[in-house]
Every structure is written in structure tokens, then in C-alpha cells.
View 1 (cartoon, rainbow, N blue to C red):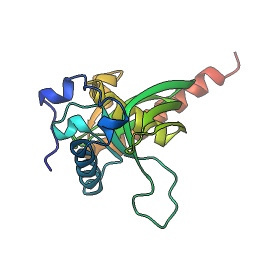
View 2: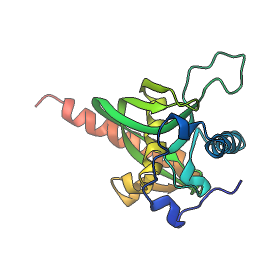
View 3: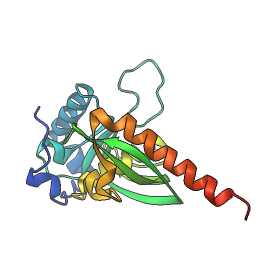
Length: 188
């Protein structure tokens, strides 16, 4: 399946809700979910939103669930009509990639801890509290549903780098962060 690339209008649209449990269980939505999971597994990504497959609907899949080791799909969550709530005002910045522009990495500030309420693929209401990398992945995919890309979250264009240069940029950014922290910690 082809993934929508930067510049495709579908990536800038606010996706339409799926609806209730009956709509989630409809054959067309189940097929979309299956296609999204298969596509995500064939890519180096941790998640995939429907708009990235040219479908402007509020559903994404993400590898954020606890892995039990027996089922290769055990860590894949299906999030239909998700709603996020920030649980911790702490914001952490990390470089993120995106399947819609894999040649770039973007330094993105995200909340450390969130709660997500959603319908699962059976149409059952669910709620998860996530922190760290799983919270980051979910916020990234949720942004896709709202027509927001990582490049929109960058605090500076200097925080958008080629994927091949991301390790160098990350090291430089972390050194600046450490230097800034040391300056504020120095006694006066």
C-alpha cells in the first residue's frame, strides 16, 4: 500500500470520525484496520494513521501495548475516534521520524504522560495511560488525525534535519541542553 507523502492534501485535513461500535465493526472499517496493520508491519514505523493511507478517518494503529512474546501483533493497538488527555505537564523533546517524509527527522516536544480514550477494533470503549515513548507515538498519530505534522511542531526550522544527520543533530542538541542546565545550576 502506498503511503501519502508530504504535500498530499489528505495529510492536512482533519479526519472524519468513524462513529459508534456498529460503524467500527463494519466490513469496510475492519478491512481498513487490517490494511493499516499490514502496512505498518512492512515499514520501519511504530504507528500509522488512516490519512497516511489516503483515508481521512479517525483511526490509527500503533505498537504501544505491552508485548507478551507469543503473538507478533500483541503490541499493536487499534485506536478508533481517540481522544487524548494530558496527565503530566512535563514536556520532553526527541527527534521523530514520519513515514510520510522518511528523509527527515524533527525535534518534537511532547507531553510525557497522557491518557487516551478510544474504541478498539471490536467497538469497545477503552482507556490507556501511556508515558514515555508509547505516549509520544500516540501523540504523533493523533496529530495525523488532526492534519498536524511533526514539522508543524518543530520549535525552529533548525530542528528539522535529514534522517542521515539526525544522530549528529541530536548529540548537538543534547550538549546544548546540558550546557544550559549547567549554567542555571552554577552558584552565583
